[in-house]
Length: 182
Picture 1 (cartoon, one colour):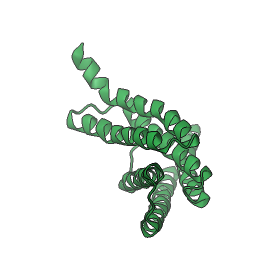
Picture 2 (cartoon, helix red, strand yellow):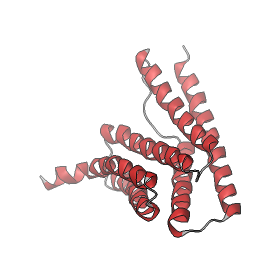
Picture 3 (tube, one colour):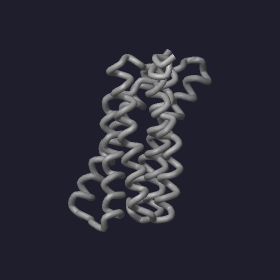
Picture 4 (cartoon, helix red, strand yellow):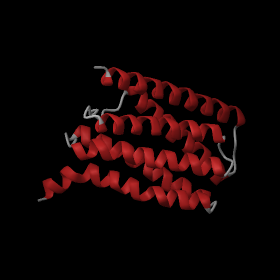
């Protein structure tokens, strides 16, 4: 019984991240930046933890392969929209992040509708993009929580996230086109 529970632990952690997402957003909207930062960090660490557990103990599952990127997308899209709304991030960056994720999800849905399902596997560009997006959001939340801002670092991180997001979107679009070829 304990081993079945342990085998499901990465999925439970991922579901926890999904549950934390509305809490982070509510805290950010209420401008409770310290609490929002803390909950966001817990959610971000949970992303690393569930992946580590799944890989280290060979606990990967089909459910986890779908839930993990879904939880990432929910957290990242939500926090970028909330931070842009608060004026803490440029709106164009939030639009870019949301558009990339809509492109990826839309491609999966279209492939499924035309009976050419895509196997959900994150590309290295996606992993780097997700890490950079989470890092930038954490940095911005920490700045709001602890009243600091490093303009040059903000600019560098925003530019890096934008470049990685566009690169990742391009990679996924190219892979999708290759997959959909007759």
